[in-house]
Image 1: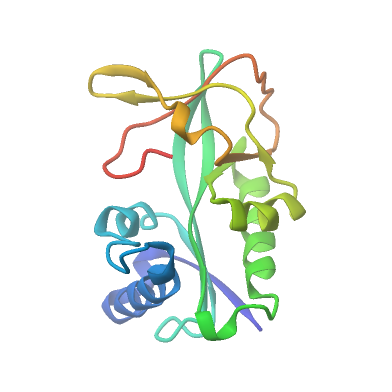
Image 2: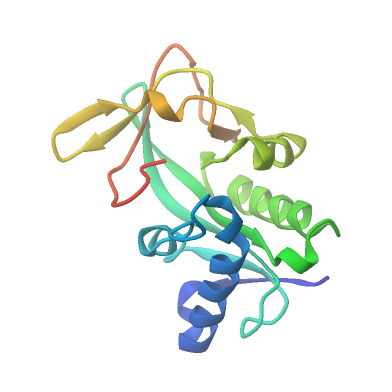
Length: 183
């Protein structure tokens, strides 16, 4: 299937509605209660960067976003391509769309950022590892309104794609602040 890359601004209102419907559908099974699996903060995290779409913008069957974030490491603010909202329509799972989306975001990260990062559950982590993403084994933290706070619960879920930033797992990756999930 052909993939299209476009900025959030080019999705338009209909494209944004279609994207939200896809994400709500794709993530519905991730919440045991069936509600809130993909909330407004999660949707907001996926906006403002570039989107990789499988299918037309008005009816996508697959999606991944790369948004710019700053991740501090060893006193350096790294321009980081953060991957968000990777999803495939439940009816289309198993036909390679997920791998194609992850390959496309890897190309975007390698072409425009010093580092790639994402948060992934165990099932999705296998897909990312096949495409060169590595689980971050060092400490994690977030720059919050109250200062830098450790985020140990994210250990094992945060993955990085090395581009040109030297990384030392003995030093923390510190993400910027945002509402909802920090990583």
